[in-house]
Each structure stands twice: as structure tokens, then as C-alpha cells.
Image (cartoon, rainbow, N blue to C red; front, side):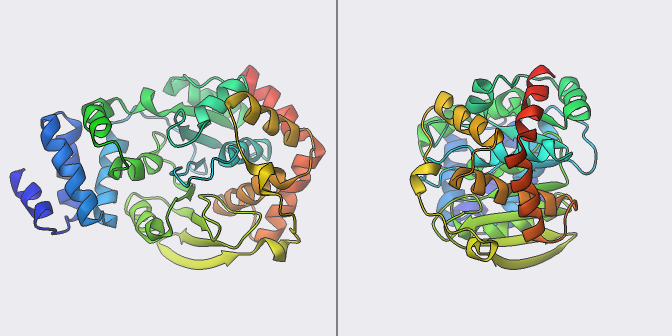
Length: 331
């Protein structure tokens, strides 16, 4: 075990199997807090690699409570931390996807880097966030949507809670958390706060048997597909990687009031979600439809991004997504 730590101190990258061993020891409580702090800070100063991410994801997934979800199930869980304090775009997109008959196992937490995390806004929307695995499985079957509250599912994370608090800044756990779905989803849309993580994320997901994914980061700094600027995409498609950009102007989007994407507290954010689900058409509905379109592509429901976007937008404007929200509330 000490050999692995020495490697990191010497700025030597770990292999996938070495990373797995390191994270197994961490998550089984075999290291004292000071040692964990040393490991996390050394990884950060060296720079985490795709193999190190992949090993951490593998262990975190293995040690979580497990949800059995159908093969086509998707998660929409970003890293956060983009500093934009925007409305809960990927959470709203997840509910929109569910209303379009896509099965969603949404994985998330309460606010860390913003005023309102996915768990906060779902609670405000009167959606249950403390579901056990069997309840998640039933909800996915019944209404195409369930939320897996990260602290309930990743109990091994208690071994690093103290160290992360003392470090007080992002560590590898901020990166691997969003990729460590308890449902072990094979399809994912992931936003990242810095484009340098796009390729490592795609490679780490591929290493963990994810079939289809969009890793996204916009030119205006969002960890979402932006309605205001081009968004860089790395697509994982059955072991192959494709890179391209989505330009909102090519989709006919020319609105530019960024204030309509600014989030506040959970009550405010949930009200904005309800408004677009009832048919309000604004920058927020554009952003949610864009990110839903990515989910439709990743789950093979649609092949063409523009058609996927138009379908998502039509569904929002119809009010059917609000009707589906009411079903999710009752599930």
C-alpha cells in the first residue's frame, strides 16, 4: 500500500488496477485521516488521470447500495462547480426525459457549489429523494424516474468525509462522484466544470462499461449544453470517441438574456421548473430542451440532434411534462 503512495509522491501515474487497490483501502477505512489527506492532495497536485478516475469510480460503484435498472436507463449528473449558479438544468432535463418515456436513474446531492443542488430542488418539487433501491426500481418502472440521494447510497464515503472537509477544496471525489451511479447506468450525460476533464471522463466511463455518453462543457463556461454559446461535446459510442460542437444558433436559438438562467434558492428554482413544464418559453426552456436532446441521443431514442431538440421543446410547450411531474410526485 505504501508503494502506491510513494508512486504518487514521485508523480508516477497509477494503473487502473493500482487505483482500484488504493481506493479499496481508502473506502474500507484502512488509512488514517492524515494519510487520506496526503493521498488526495498528492493526486491533485500530480493531476488525476483517466485510469485513476476509472479505479475510483469502479470501487465507489461496487461499494454503493445497488439499484437494478434496465439497460437503457440514463443518468444526467454533472460535476457542478462551474461558478454560474444557474437553475437546475440537468435535473429538469431528467424529468423531461422521463416524460418522453426515457428511463432515468438520477443521482445527486444537496447543494455544494451552488445555492440549490438537485436534491434540494426535487424536494421543493415534492419528489421523494430518500428512496431505497427497491423503491427506486419500482419508480423507474412506473414513472420512468427515480432519484438516488448520494449520501444514502455511498456510505463508504464516510471514511473520507473528515479529510475532504479539512482539505476544503475539490479533490478526486468531486470528479468521480457524478460518474459513480448506484444503478451502474450504461448511458450518461455529464457536464464538467473544466474542459480538461472531458477526455479523462469519457475514458473513465468507457473503462467502467458505459456504452453511450455525452461529456459536455460550453464555451461560456457551463457544465451543461448552453443556449448562448457553442458547447464542446465528447461522445462515447460503444468504445469509440467522437468530438464535435453544438451551436445553438444552428438550432435557431438567438435569445441572450442570461438572467433567465440564474438560480436562487430551491423554492425559486422549483417554480421556474414548473413554469417551463407548463409551457413557458424562455432561455431556461431552451437550455433544458438542449440537455434533454443529448439524453435522447445517448439512449438511442433519436439520431439527429436538431430533431431531438425540437421533440424536447415541443414536449415542454405542450404541458405534458407538468402532467408527468404530477405522476412522479405520487409515485
